[in-house]
Length: 213
Image 1 (tube, rainbow, N blue to C red):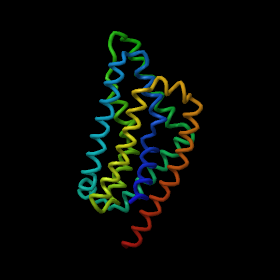
Image 2: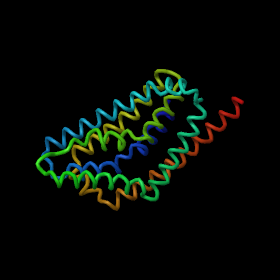
Image 3: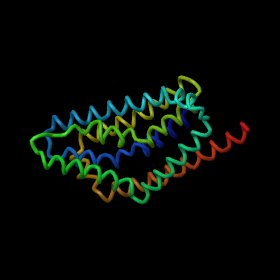
Image 4: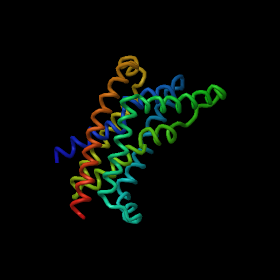
């Protein structure tokens, strides 16, 4: 149980990537009133939680309806997470996020009288509850045989979302302390860890498929 918790905690931390989404949230809410920034922080976390819960509880039903085996999903999910890891290592993921943030910032500068609601897009989806996080929670839920194991998975993802919420609420001092260089270094280290975990998912999926055959 402890091994599952640690594995899920680390994997979700890498998939959700709090050090990576924090600068984006800061850029999208920079200059906005504290009340607006606080509202966006809470709302984005609540929406992301709902999305991940929906896939966690209904993912197996969806797979069964599409006649997709768990081993096939483990392998495909592992490949997806591995590609995401490569993007983190080579900073492609960060560049794409910054590009999205830049577009929204330009739109706000055109209409400075209003502050956009960035809680649903891009914060909740796809930055917090993106393809990687969705695939991750479905993978772990497929390997959680009991309610206790499922509770451990929910606890792991909950802790990561709580970390994001705390970081969002204190984003100003955090950005001054961390800095762009430190955030980039952390993201690359997490990318290497995610690549190893993704490879294990792929091995498990292929092994399970051959054993079933």
